[in-house]
Image 1 (cartoon, rainbow, N blue to C red):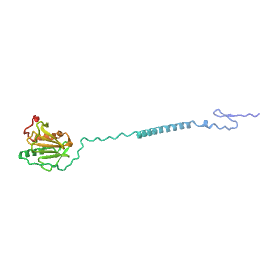
Image 2 (cartoon, rainbow, N blue to C red):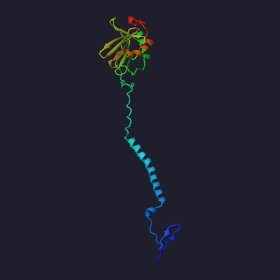
Image 3 (cartoon, rainbow, N blue to C red):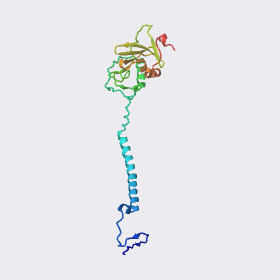
Image 4 (cartoon, helix red, strand yellow):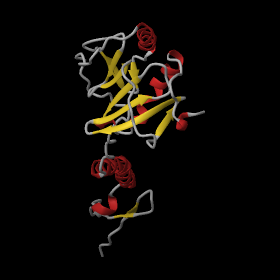
Length: 220
């Protein structure tokens, strides 16, 4: 009788008698280390992809977010007026010696501007006339005292008493408490005529003495 025998390998596995082993299952024979390598590579790819995804999302959000509206410039309250520098036509009647002296003193002390109106040259009598802005606000020194009803109002501005007469193109303000008459014409465009004589009044107080028949409304 013929019997078959098989030897045992070192790991205890019986070896077929003919010495030929059946091939092992390829899946079962796959090394464990390769599986760990594959998992590690997948994890690394995930770690790399995550920051890129976040960066793309941030960029997309930034692009879709509307820009803040640009600040709208506010018009300046002190925007300079566009003014002519041409001489302003004014009359220059002859003055007696005393009024001429007073007028020269006044004109030498008038400011270079009244509020935002720059001083302009005049066609005649710069020693007794001045002009500011465009349309021109004018200051005339000397002349005949105006007459007006006793019931008319008079206004005191910086210690100078003025009579206000409204005209079609503006207002005429005349001093009624000074030795020499000062007349200021304020164009209609400037409105609130009395507010324009504040600086002029201060100069008048310093250069033109009080005098004449002062109306009761001007008594201080």
